[in-house]
Image 1 (tube, one colour):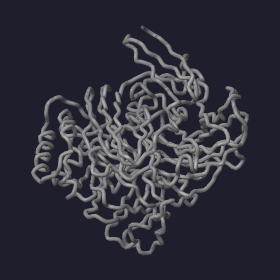
Image 2 (cartoon, one colour; image 1 turned 135 degrees about the horizontal axis):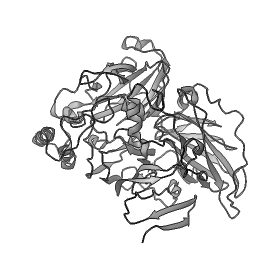
Image 3 (cartoon, helix red, strand yellow; image 1 turned 90 degrees about the vertical axis):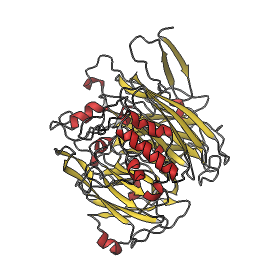
Length: 613
């Protein structure tokens, strides 16, 4: 049956599904907004269970903003499927890579306790899943709850559509559905470009840049839950059209938790909902007492939950949800607003557009960019004192920079980095493997620091990039934000700083303005090799990544599964990772010397008596 089209109405909007036999044309992706309305039927339980999924990664055609292009999908869905679980659950995801390039999936915000090899970062914690290959991620969610997400961590394939939500509930979560709020809605915000990410990356590596600019692009449109509108007159496409704005349906006279997730590859956004104040109750998996605001900022990789009160009208009423680009930190940016409709459900529902007006006190588009935690106090509802004092001997500094670097071939290039090193990805030999073998991992290829012992430590990030702001994400940890300031901080003047040691906010992604510093406290109880990087995807592909190694001796005792070792069998031992100002990797079928080294590591770990998982 060819070209059969099924139309049906779900709770959020009209869904178009296209099924067709293989005629040489890519299938059309399914854009299903209903998945973002979490069901109240999900059982929140403290009895652990195993939840198993299959992710088939393929190419498809999609027009999320009215302009058709190739996208990457999971199970032909864009955005990808929801993973919903409870604290203590085991997540098993079978990933089948049907693309013509490597892939990986990172579980953003998951600590990966005892499973650092499941973090999903090629060159850091694994070799890539090769074209036509498969890999199973298997990890347990320990002592975490809140709003998380998953996305590709291979080059900047995230910008081509590989992302989706990961929501974790707990009977012990400080904010409970049925007590503090009535229903959940996920709200993904993302930029969207009409060119494939590899085209953009290649252009940014040239003197001319992309579209005549060396700066990463702003985005051709803003998507909310995978839908948006582009300017068709600027596309030169006869098939471009203006889709209806996405809709988020909520019950009237209720308290609804909106779980905002920023999957953008570049801009900071400011979000507001007409007539509805936003009560901030969570950031990056930490339940907080936060402000009630008319507008909130959100940086790439960040998550915020806001509760709204839907008593502002009657059944069928509708209001604009506005997402605007913060131009104060966007080089050469132009005003851009993405719109979605928040509509009260009931018998009187219509499809009429909202007649609501924006709040009168919204920030000017060019206002200074600042993280929500900078502007307001976000106090964790579960109190926790600072884990490290200002005089800690386990304090390390990362100087975040942009400028000229030298790659492993001796060539000079412009890029981003830390501590005078721009990350160059030895994709065939993950740093996790080096640490397990006991090989030196400090090098000119990646900036690194080591916390050798159990306890607590501090990471100081000095953003020396002048006017450029960055959102920094630390894998495998949540950190306490114990201090901020302008200029640069050194180890010598730590004792002169008044840090915030009483119940500081806990996050995993943090916006730091250019010419400023932030001090982060971490607990060094999670052995592993953890990436620290800018979550502007284009900056990451230009080298803005470092690694934090925690308890390397304990890392040496971790036994990685056979399937993890086998990933490196198909990776060229002379290759470097994609988009790192270096040659692209080649994927081979022959077993390599790196693969043999991993075999030796596995044998050594077994001989040390570690348990294989």
